[in-house]
Image 1 (tube, rainbow, N blue to C red):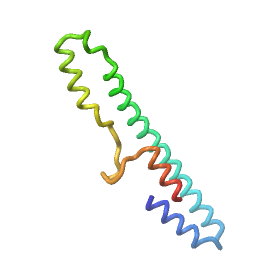
Image 2 (spheres, rainbow, N blue to C red; image 1 turned 90 degrees about the horizontal axis):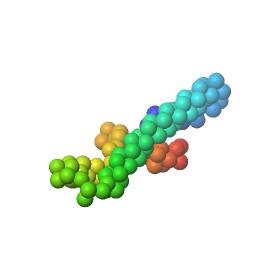
Image 3 (cartoon, helix red, strand yellow; image 1 turned 30 degrees about the vertical axis):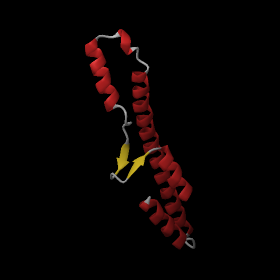
Image 4 (spheres, one colour; image 1 turned 180 degrees about the vertical axis):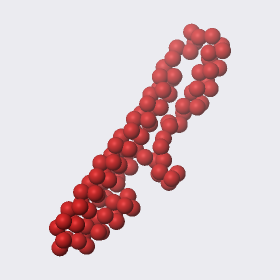
Length: 105
């Protein structure tokens, strides 16, 4: 986000120089595409980890052995919170954050 903002400022200051302006705008667009693909993969991770929890909730646990029930309980506790990727432990990378970032820019 910081680099995208910096390239935007550089592009605005170089409006009179078309070659430099176009280079900065192209670089900014490439950064947005890169951020999109990172956010897309992070969103897939969140969706799949949520799917695991949902699938475990739908298991017919009453037809399994007591050992399997204990394992299911443990797995349910571990998958209660979905797996997420974070950026410096400051915010979660997902399609929601990409949407917020691309809306600002």
